[in-house]
Amino acid sequence: MKSAISQSLWKEANRVLVGGVNSPVRAFKGVGGDPFFAASGKGARVTDVDGNELIDYVLSWGPLILGHAHPRVTEAVRLALEKGSSFGIPTEAEIRLAERIVEIVPSIEKVRLVNSGTEATMSAIRLARGYTVRDLIVKLEGCYHGHADGLLVKAGSGLTTLGVPTSPGVPAAYASCTLTMPYNDLDAARALFEAHGENIAAIILEPVPGNMGVVLPEDGYLQALRDLTATYGSLLIFDEVMSGFRVAMGGAQAHFSVMPDLTVLGKVIGGGLPVGAYGGSEEIMDRVSPVGPIYQAGTLSGNPLATAAGIATLDVLEEPGVFNGVVETTTKLGAELGALAREAGVPVFQTQLGTMSCMFFHDGPIKSYSDATASDTKRYAKFFWGMLERGVYLAPSQYEAAFTSIAHGPSEIDQTLSAAKAAFAAL
Ligand SMILES: *Cc1c(COP(=O)(O)O)cnc(C)c1O
Image (cartoon, rainbow, N blue to C red):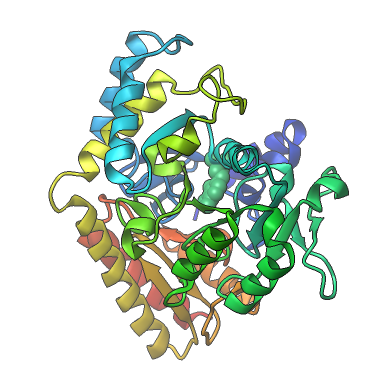
């Protein structure tokens, strides 16, 4: 793989950008080595500044379910741009995107659009606290909800469930309002609610976690959390920023028929532009300003370019057979990759739901963060570089999902599988 231009840009980037990047995972620390610089993308492929063409399974970390530069999205954004990039007063497209979200995501009656997943989870938590008049929230180990203070928290040492900050700059007092518990552990959830239930505003979780690799909920787990929160008058927040329009069109809540009180969205609903959203029942959402007293605002929220990209993305995705086509591609690819790993004698544990998938370099089973972090990350890194050399770009970390798009067709799958065969053999 040629990399002279990427290497020289990387040096320049490090002079003026922190660590050369604007979001840490892009620095490839999870696999060692330096990132390439993207020049352009079309369909399933991204071309770097050195002219290497790569089949992309990162897809901007999930949003690009139609692939890069889909003509319908590009055209919608271009048309919107020509009419003005932002107004700060209501536009019709905001209604149309909100209508689609309300129609597709079963538990949402009303929605508020924001600019990122982080902003949406922050706002949903404020709403849950304001609505319940309680301070504590429960976060699950290994779930990621963006970089807001109260969510950069891990379990404290020993038996305490009181959160401690995972980042300097997060006040310990604030982190102590976040309790943590392991994913898929119902006993831990029951114990936590017995001890603190009356003060818990909400549980926030990725119903299908995709930020520790992809981990699936055990049978009945999500419903049990639904029941537990209802018993204690706490809210259940599903962070479907990744799983929304990926696990199923209507997200994990549609797939498992478990309805949260609040849902957080992002990624796919922005079609590659900056968007987030949170929504729920009218009763809860009407506590947000200007109807209710819980404050949340945004200069660029509901931005015309972002809403145009989001609507165009959902339009294409809702055409008959389109979403299921991406699911089929994901399933086929997973099955064939698994067969290649077995042939090569490389132990892997694969997970998949809808268009999210993951291959852990681990025997499995993987049900929680502590299981996931037992994976052989060195081996993953070697596989990652082996694939990149052969023209396939996987996530630069074991603890990420692989994403497919409507543009991943038979030729991309074939090329991916022949690269994988060689990369497994080289392990
Ligand atoms: C990506 C992600 C976020 C954060 O969204 P940003 O737009 O990066 O702020 C939050 N929750 C989940 C589940 C995500 O995957």
